[in-house]
Length: 292
Image (cartoon, rainbow, N blue to C red; front, side, top):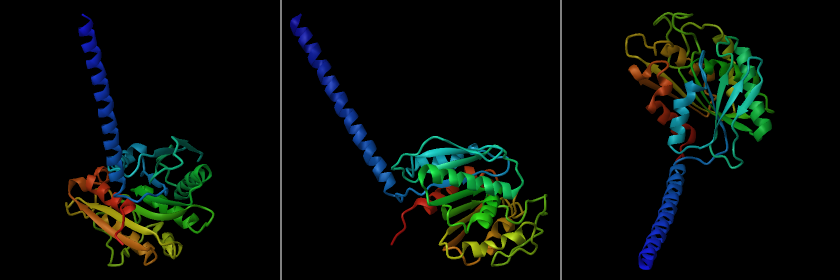
């Protein structure tokens, strides 16, 4: 009987030792995988702010943020809730050694059509992050009307050196010169090679001052839009000409400017921010290591 107990104890000890070794190997392997994943991307503390479009929320940004996390860009994601009177509450906390942090912005009044108000709210998010985390640069990713709100922010506050400065921006389905069936009919407006529209809808004329605002700031721009290939030259909501007219607004001022068109059903207005290829492209643009 005593020998049996000795054998039982020995087996238990062996199992425990094996379990400890397995856990240690798994942990080391996970750490190696994480390091390998991060090695594909820059190691930066510059936050990237995601802003939804009209009627949207942080859920509109969920897929894009999830793709960034799954690809090993970052583990640090917080949400900035902007109340109807413009107060900002940060949900979550960034680590002091944060890498490529993401801030999802959610506007309580998500159907606010006043661009000046939206611009002020965006500024409030930046100043909150500045006071909490001492940020001095930021990246921006916007969808639909979120891009127009951001354009107004840059027009109003872009030259304020006391605020964090724009580093890179990604614009998805931007509504710079109108929305279909609101102030633009299908195939009514075209753009030339420089992005200049054949007709300018308000507030496009005023936004032409952006070229001066961006001048000398070394901002990289990625402009993404969708074409359903149904003859409308649009994503079903925003014409390609409206999105492409950003080029004329910025002129030669950005450090770099690139357009990227997606086609087919997955290029529909609300599907663009659920599109894996779109996510892959902007992840590489924002955080990919550049070859020397």
